[in-house]
Length: 63
Image 1 (spheres, one colour):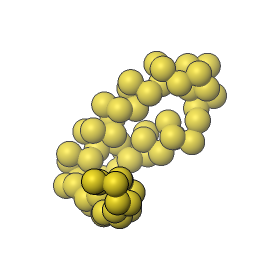
Image 2: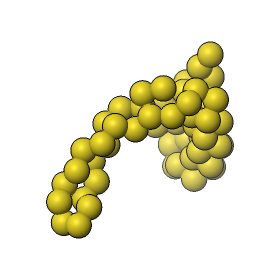
Image 3: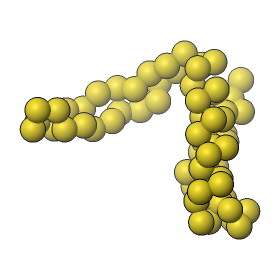
């Protein structure tokens, strides 16, 4: 599963890398992070889910 490009500074140099993972691991991790996110994000706690929360939930529900 392609999860898109990421940027990191490694040894003082900006590096671009492609994040990938198997579907079952990506779904499991997205669900885990979503559960944490909705308890700590001010917008999500009020059930006014933020874009990040919606994206994590959608990824966790993919087939």
